[in-house]
Image (cartoon, rainbow, N blue to C red; front, top):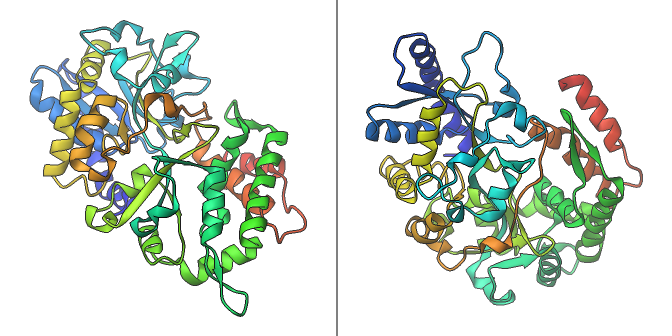
Length: 423
């Protein structure tokens, strides 16, 4: 079952909980507090918390566009705790309370959290966000082809380009019958390439500005890769259409292609049976593994009416033993077949990843990156997903097309069209 299907199935539960929340907040009951989230897993986590804490009850309210739901409407019940993606933006200090007081031996130990991710949650020297979970980009390939790669847990873009090209093969009619990898096969991969040249997109209000010099370097890199390795974008697209119509894990085991680009949240959410013949490498950019943009974080809403209860939940959540219980519960309820790890990703607690995750995800044993190898994402506007899908992706697809002589629309034109329709 896909994550989207899972979300559609679980959404009615959130709606019921949302109604329950409204009723409780208007009553004289003072021991409940409200969690706003865009993560379905927090239904299960809150149930576990409530079962262990009879004096404090968490009520979950689903907000599909969480970051854009803050601040709440005037007639809307305010959240106490907020958990989700894209919470780090220019409104961070207006939306949330500082959490520095929780960083101690007895509540949340800073040394248990990946340092680059903890630092990411700061603004003006204060801690406003605690990282909850994160994902990383990777390529999968058949274990039969592992001899083609160096024995390492990561691979750079240049190494990926060179290794993939060596796998290519043509028939007597000069058509590709094997192609190691094509940049144009995945929109998110095109976007990943931009990170190789620094910060191309920078938050500005509800939109972003573009460093065109860096973006142009990214486009040239994509085009050079395609032309030098795979002849043209048309060749890549023709090959993809003809051979790559099955799920990615099957594409590489059928050995028409060497690599498939994916992310940890997608590949580790499928069954162990489906990935038993796969190997993988984390992708490095500028000598670091870039944490994906949708990293999940947790914060206390600035106007929370129950900050103490929210703090208690945070202190509970960031205990490794409790996250182990969450994983055990997901396994028992068969939720682990629908979503990966803690809140759809790796835990921000490195001991959970190192000691607990390999029990459930055997391929991770010996393949976990170090704290020093991680690069936290940039800050993005709250509607970054929409902007990326409707502005960034279309631009990169068009600009990186080696068969297209003239750019159809500039990124400024695409952004202007988005603002007219969605802003």
